[in-house]
Image 1: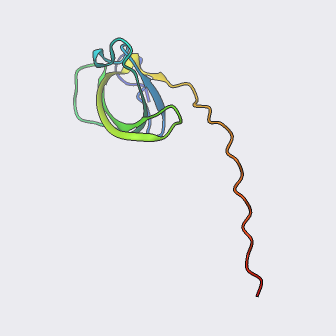
Image 2: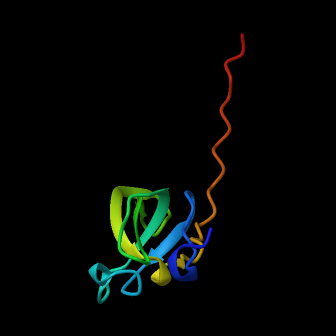
Image 3: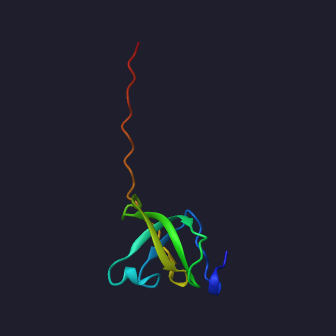
Length: 97
Protein backbone atom coordinates (compact mmCIF):
# COMPACT_ATOMS: atom_id res chain seq x y z
CA UNK A 1 0.00 0.00 0.00
CA UNK A 2 1.60 3.30 -1.04
CA UNK A 3 2.14 5.79 1.71
CA UNK A 4 2.87 9.52 1.64
CA UNK A 5 4.85 10.61 -1.38
CA UNK A 6 4.34 7.25 -3.10
CA UNK A 7 6.65 5.43 -0.66
CA UNK A 8 5.59 1.86 0.08
CA UNK A 9 4.46 1.16 3.65
CA UNK A 10 6.04 -2.09 4.89
CA UNK A 11 3.91 -5.03 5.93
CA UNK A 12 4.30 -7.29 8.97
CA UNK A 13 6.77 -10.07 8.22
CA UNK A 14 8.96 -8.01 5.91
CA UNK A 15 12.64 -7.73 6.81
CA UNK A 16 14.13 -4.27 6.35
CA UNK A 17 17.63 -2.85 6.43
CA UNK A 18 17.54 0.43 8.33
CA UNK A 19 20.45 2.81 7.80
CA UNK A 20 21.02 6.55 7.53
CA UNK A 21 18.56 6.76 4.61
CA UNK A 22 15.78 5.70 7.01
CA UNK A 23 16.78 7.89 9.97
CA UNK A 24 19.74 9.81 11.38
CA UNK A 25 19.70 7.46 14.39
CA UNK A 26 21.38 4.93 12.08
CA UNK A 27 24.27 7.19 11.02
CA UNK A 28 27.75 5.86 10.33
CA UNK A 29 28.16 2.12 10.77
CA UNK A 30 24.96 1.80 12.79
CA UNK A 31 22.48 -0.27 10.83
CA UNK A 32 19.59 -2.40 11.95
CA UNK A 33 17.96 -5.41 10.31
CA UNK A 34 14.35 -5.37 11.46
CA UNK A 35 11.56 -7.91 10.96
CA UNK A 36 8.41 -5.79 11.00
CA UNK A 37 5.58 -6.90 13.29
CA UNK A 38 3.50 -3.71 13.29
CA UNK A 39 3.18 -0.43 11.42
CA UNK A 40 1.55 2.17 13.66
CA UNK A 41 -1.38 4.13 12.33
CA UNK A 42 -0.84 7.04 14.72
CA UNK A 43 -0.29 10.37 12.94
CA UNK A 44 3.30 11.40 12.23
CA UNK A 45 5.15 13.86 10.04
CA UNK A 46 4.53 13.49 6.31
CA UNK A 47 6.56 10.55 4.93
CA UNK A 48 7.49 9.09 8.34
CA UNK A 49 6.11 6.17 10.37
CA UNK A 50 6.57 4.19 13.56
CA UNK A 51 7.60 0.56 13.07
CA UNK A 52 7.67 -2.13 15.72
CA UNK A 53 9.70 -5.24 15.05
CA UNK A 54 12.45 -7.59 16.05
CA UNK A 55 16.12 -6.73 15.54
CA UNK A 56 17.81 -9.66 13.81
CA UNK A 57 21.39 -10.87 14.19
CA UNK A 58 23.59 -12.19 11.37
CA UNK A 59 21.88 -15.59 11.55
CA UNK A 60 18.40 -14.08 11.26
CA UNK A 61 17.57 -14.75 14.91
CA UNK A 62 15.56 -12.15 16.84
CA UNK A 63 17.66 -10.47 19.52
CA UNK A 64 15.55 -7.54 20.71
CA UNK A 65 12.14 -5.95 20.22
CA UNK A 66 12.44 -2.38 18.88
CA UNK A 67 10.20 0.53 18.00
CA UNK A 68 11.72 2.98 15.51
CA UNK A 69 10.64 6.21 13.83
CA UNK A 70 11.71 6.09 10.18
CA UNK A 71 11.33 7.82 6.84
CA UNK A 72 9.33 5.67 4.42
CA UNK A 73 11.41 6.78 1.43
CA UNK A 74 14.59 5.47 3.11
CA UNK A 75 13.37 1.93 3.81
CA UNK A 76 15.06 -0.92 1.96
CA UNK A 77 14.38 -4.62 1.89
CA UNK A 78 17.23 -6.46 3.64
CA UNK A 79 19.25 -8.95 1.62
CA UNK A 80 18.30 -12.53 2.45
CA UNK A 81 20.23 -14.03 5.31
CA UNK A 82 21.98 -17.20 4.19
CA UNK A 83 22.21 -19.72 6.98
CA UNK A 84 24.76 -22.54 6.90
CA UNK A 85 23.19 -25.95 6.31
CA UNK A 86 22.10 -27.71 9.49
CA UNK A 87 23.48 -31.14 10.27
CA UNK A 88 20.75 -33.73 10.45
CA UNK A 89 19.97 -34.94 13.95
CA UNK A 90 21.39 -38.32 14.86
CA UNK A 91 18.75 -41.01 14.71
CA UNK A 92 17.50 -42.18 18.09
CA UNK A 93 17.15 -45.82 18.81
CA UNK A 94 14.04 -46.98 20.54
CA UNK A 95 14.27 -49.58 23.24
CA UNK A 96 13.13 -52.98 22.12
CA UNK A 97 10.48 -54.46 24.33
